[in-house]
Image (tube, rainbow, N blue to C red; front, side, top):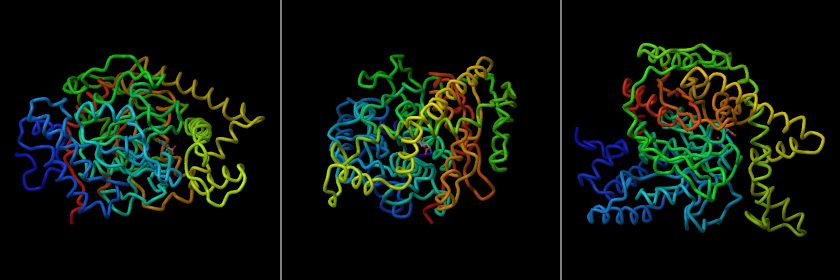
Length: 493
Ligand code: GLN
């Protein structure tokens, strides 16, 4: 089928766009104009973008087309649009982190991943909406507005990278970057039927990405196919001396190994089938596991008793680190400054009081508490020991298998407002994702079906550190044998 026949270019994968750009069937300006047109028609109801500077995107596209004309394309992503979560610095662009705190802030430099995307010729395309400072699972904590789920506008797109997931799923951009501290790439990918990957800790530099919880944060690629995510990971991964946790391991071409088919050994922790797991999602996971079994993979029934302590360990670790990282937003060093304050103490207190939203304040207070004298050992110290315990649990399981399979989230996308009054219920949407960050492992979410009401659900595959190639190959194998990634939401009617 010809590219974009009858329906524009918006649902084309980056893989097909890349081929069409290379053969000069389309040019980047054409692609960017088509995406901008799409945003004008549907982003009013979805609100995936906090801002989308069309003139800037077109300027980049013109340059990309000139490179193609000269035969000097920078690689497969040259001319392909990538949307950026609004907690990553893009030179001369405002960056809000979904917060009023950063009103008026303009980034003076590009973060590492944006530098890498520019070096690959990609078009930096719009700032996507997010939960304030990446704290949340529904994008409802954005200080500006919520983002709709393209499959059902009355439901959330997941979070905190909900804008990026929505943009990809709705055909507003072929690719997007999110950040994943406890699931914020994988869970919104699952809620929107996109593919989302959280790389091994250290695989992608965090330089220039606003820190939430530094020992957990990773930037992750999102797309509508596994190939697209593999290509985007290849573009952003690699050593960067400005992030001391960045790994020197060589970066392979992740798209090369995607055809690999093995009889993988896949472990399924029985703890995932707990009370909180929605029936439709449970059936989706079972079908996915049966598929792998039918393809000759060995399925292992394992126990991961540490799963129930992971939410506690995560929320203590994440809030403690956020408390420290967010102390720089005080109205003096960084961030909104209150106009009503007199003394220095008042400047701090009032600026933070006015600038931060309720969830961020809750996390800062929790972080202060778990680190405070007298409670430090009981909470923070214990959470760190729990982390070691969880890590040992994974190590044990991985001695005997290639991947661990779980649902990405325990439910399908929930209705807007359903969990905003109950932070603990919201935190539980991360039950399957947070332990991966606590241990620094790579994990991917691919769509593994739809509920009877047509709502997407995700399969999460977790691998050993730096086994992204194998992880992507297994996800691509699953994708090839299902038609989920060819389904698109009906937002146009
Ligand atoms: N939902 C989790 C939280 O609120 C994870 C967020 C994230 O990964 N940025 O902390």
